[in-house]
Image: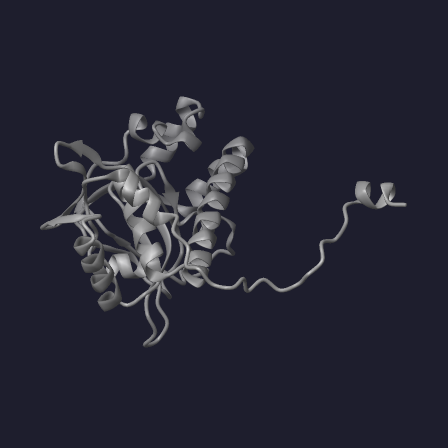
Amino acid sequence: MKVEAPGPLWGLRRFPVLADLPDAPLHALAGASVSRQVSRGTILHVPGERADEVYCLHGGRVSSLWEHGESRTISIGDFGPGDIFGESCLWMAAGANWDDTAVTTSPALLTIVPRIVFRRLLDEHPAVERAVVAQSVAHQDATRRRLCDALSLSLRARVVGQLLRLAEAGRDTPQGRKFTIMRQRELAALVVCTRESAALALRALEDERLIVRAGRELIVPDLDRLRAAAHERPSQASNVLPFSRLPSPSRAASAP
């Protein structure tokens, strides 16, 4: 890792959850922190290490991975510019350990804040804690949706959905929407499959001309076609169990 100067005031103020803080507490936060420019594939922490840091991501992308024995790796978090992650340690007991691996999936610039300093800030500014909790819940909801997709959607639909999210954040070119693709191992972790299955799915989409590969970059010639493919569902019988809905108090009161 290349260690830079402590995170400047203007850099931390760009994070939405910190934007309304007065200068004094933000200066204190920046003074206790360190900013780092790191390369792709840098491991920030691994399971068993002390959870005593919070990460503020200025640029680049980071994945949180769950690995268990010889089983496949699952991505349980995907973070981009403006995200604060590792925040779960703020509500853990002192001395708790990480249970995930955090790794950069692109070159990244981040500010690392000591847990005790960030926790003190939340105690003094409850509005900031509410904002951090709201962002944390949004991250958990995104993870829940991705894992539900892994159980309910085909591999093709999962890969197309992930590519669509990347394409919508890409740039327009005469050939179509262009973006940099992650490594197949990272894509496999996001969509919950093996690296070999991810490679086969990409090859099939290329055969259908939904994507064009150019080294580390992908081009989507027709974004609407990719959107349509993301919403395709296999034709099969419903597997929903015949549960009944608990009536709300208002409906129960109006029932004859």
